Figure (cartoon, rainbow, N blue to C red):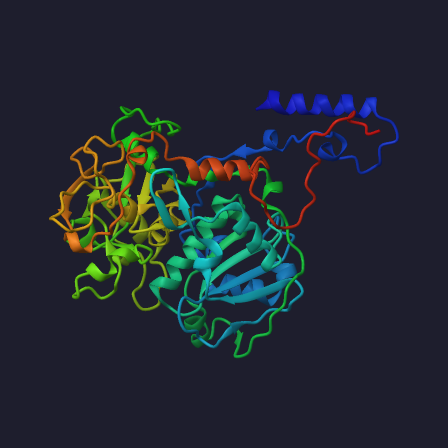
Length: 482
C-alpha cells in the first residue's frame, strides 16, 4: 500500500518539475492525462465497515439513532451535526404503502426531507449474477448515481437518515436495505443512519416536530460516488462464496473469496417456519408470472414458490421478529440483541454470513448484527429465494421443470452437503424456469461485484449520472498538454 502511494507521488513530482505554467490548483488527475482512479481505491473489510453501537442508543451519532438525536439535528443542523460532517442533512421517509400525513420539518437550506414510496424502484435492481437472475438486490452504479442526482446528494459531505414513515416491517426493512445499498456503494458509515422508530409514532409521542403539509425542495447539486475512492463491495456475499465456504474450499468455482481465516458462521434471518423447512414458506417473486395459473388457490398471493424449503447447511436461526418491538418496530436494547446473537452460538471474531428470504428482509438482520452489534458481517443478497430455487426435481408429466436439470450441476443446492431440512414444494407452485446447461456448469457467480468494481473505477462501459468532474483519461500528447 505504501509503495503504491510513493509511486503516485513520485510521478506527480516528476510531472510538476517537468511542466511549466501549470495553474495553482494543480491536482493529480487534472495535470496528468492518465486516469489513476483505479489505483487510488481503498478496499474495505467487513470488520472496517461494521458499526458498534453505544449501549445507550441516544449517544449514537450514526448507525442507529434515536428521536432525541434526530430532533437535535433538525433543530440546528449547523451547530449540532456530528463531528467531521460538513454537508447537508438529508432525510428519507420510507413509505411502502399509505402514509402518515406527517412530514419532517426542514429548512430547505441545510436540511432536506423526502417522503418516498418507490424505494424498490430507486434502490433495488433485477440483476444477473452469472447463475440466476435475482430481483430486489443492490442497484447498479447508474441507478445509485441517479439517486444522488434526483435528491441533490453529495456523498462526499452529506449525512443521510432513513426513517420509517409509519411503523411496519416493510418500512423498517426497506430502510435497512436502503442503508445497506448506500454503504455497499462506498457511502461512509459515519454519515449514514436509520431512525429507531417511525415518524408517525414519534410525532404522536411528542418527540419529533413534523408538519401536515409538504413542499419539495432540492439542493440542486450532486456528487459522484466514484470520487470517494472507497470499495465496500465485500459486503455482498455471492452464492459462489457461500458454497465455496460451506464445502471447505473444495470446489472448482472461480473468483470466490478465500474462507475467512478466523472462521465463519451462517445466520438464517428468517422466521422459524422457513428455517425448519415448512412447505410453501418462501415465494420466489411475482416476476415468475409463468407459474401464476398453476398456483395453488389456497395461497394468498399469485407468486411462485422456490423448488424446495429448508435452510443452508450449518446455519443457525436469528428470528427477525425477536429483534424489534412488534408495535413500535423500534429495535430492542443493545443487551437484548447481543443476547439473541449469543444464543446462536456465535464465537467472537468469526465472520458472519447473513441471509433472509430476499435481500430486503435479510438486510434487517444484517443491520442488527453489523451496524448495531459491530460484528464483521456480509449479506447473501440472493437469500433463500435464490438458494432454494436451485433444486433438482422430477416433476410429474405436464408440470414445469425445475431450475436445475443436471444432477451434477455446480449450483444444485438441494444436497446434503449444502442444505438441511429439505421439503419439496408442490410441482404446480414452482416456476417454469430452467437454467440452460451452460449456466448449470458455469464456474463464476461474481458478475455483479465485477460490474460494480468496474463502475467505481471508471472502467465500466455503462453510463452514469451525477456531478463531480472526472479526471481526463489517457489521450495522446504529453502530460503537460500541447
